[in-house]
Length: 188
Ligand SMILES: [Zn+2]
Image 1 (cartoon, rainbow, N blue to C red):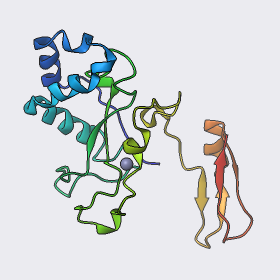
Image 2: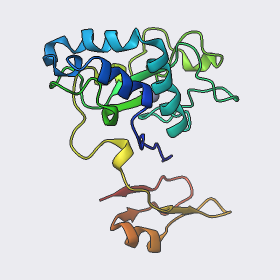
Image 3: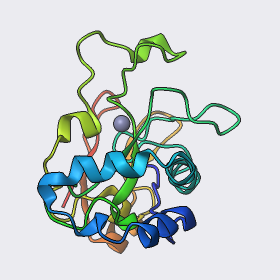
């Protein structure tokens, strides 16, 4: 699993927007889309949030870890969105809460991406698209899952072996198949 980091500070232009529009984040949750659309109309502030998220997350989608930037670090047009980890319509105050913002793909299958293998017609339904207006189950925010060392070592002969030291460090047990053709898996 790749590390997807959260922002460590509020993007300055988002803070400026909130200060200039103090009533926006107090609007009821039923008006979340309107609040978000209002913020997005501030292109400089919206762009800065995207830029900060792309940098913090190293261009990776929060959920599927697909790379959403090109080699220069520029977001691939149409293949990204700002995700509200806790649904913006779920409670007042979530829309402009910078700790609730993350970068995600638009389903991982956008039609005009250079890598055409990522486009499956009619199946643009992963990540934020699939999550919709639901909240993540408690404890599943990828940004909060602790980093651990490799739990499985792959030998030069293809055999899998549990890395007992790393498994012990994170208190996970690893069960491995006995032949090279089987797959190892971890479970808590
Ligand atoms: Zn994704």
